Each structure stands twice: as structure tokens, then as C-alpha cells.
Amino acid sequence: MSLLKNLGNKALNTAKVVGSKSQDMMEIGKLKMQISQAEGEIKKLKAEIGEVVYTAYASGQGSPSEQVVSLCDAINAKYAEIEELKLKIQQVQND
Image (cartoon, rainbow, N blue to C red):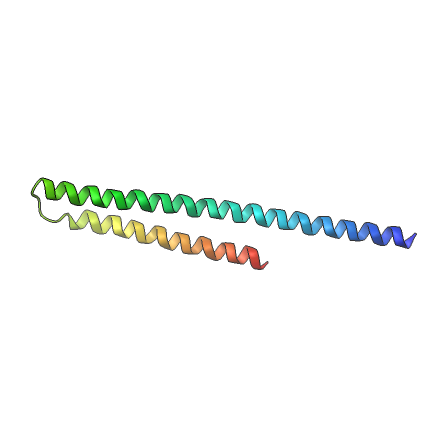
């Protein structure tokens, strides 16, 4: 009888571990998706910088430094966001 009870407890514990690991994998997947989205936004911002610089050049304007600095600040914020997300992934993996 205790063999069946012991086997049942082991099966229950295994199911809990599997459930926990599944949740961790889902969380990691969500975080990786957020990283991909941030990387896509960085690409858009970089393209926008190129467009601003070229438009200023083509129209003979001076350097559009304020716009470029603003866009660069936005890119830096996205890189910081990515680093935070990577830290969260490490935390989930270490738990």
C-alpha cells in the first residue's frame, strides 16, 4: 500500500515540476518576443535617423542634430529595455 502511495506522491511531484518548467518556458518565450519587438523598433529608429539626415542634406539644411539626438536617445532606451529583459530571462532560468 505504501508503495502505491509513494508512487502517487512521486507522480504528483513530477507533475508539479513539469508544470513549473512549462510556466518558465512560457515566460521566457514572452520575454524573447519582447526583445524581438524592441530590436525591430531599434531598426525603425535607425532608418528614421537615416531619413532625417538625408532629407536635411538633400534640402541643404544644416545638421538636424536635435532630431538625431532624440532618436539616438530612444534607441539607447530600447537597448536598456533589452538588457532588462535579458536579466529577467536569466532570473527565470535560475529559479
